[in-house]
Length: 201
Image (cartoon, rainbow, N blue to C red):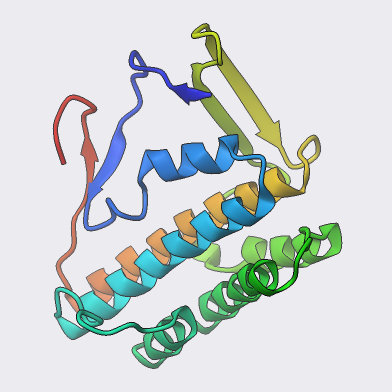
């Protein structure tokens, strides 16, 4: 499925634009490979860490000029005030990503996803987000023949890859809510903007 040019939805821009790139999430829906889906999610989480570290230290790119592993960025972010429960979930997703990297033939396990779902449902309760089993993941666009198409995924009817994606989408929204609240409390300026599709970011 590809993006429908007539879609009236809008993208998220400003400070969170590298996190909410619609092409990333569309690819995660379309890619049947679990490993590639997890890798995309991992890269998006790394953008959260970059944003948090940069804003807290008032640095455009805290990690410029040197390779820093995800785990190191995660620990630095925690030391800079990242919520412990968010840290724990990110660390778990990093562990999942590493299993795909180092174990040939590794697959997502339902028991692991169920445990992850429980943690994500419980984190950042002030966000008042739906629980994973209540959330619907909807995509609209065109199919391989160019005809309009849409699909709705729910936890109950999804395979393990889509279940991971549902949990991940909810997690990203909860992290965003938490970060906005923290930035506001700390007096750190930030922007999260709705960008019309015809306007360049």
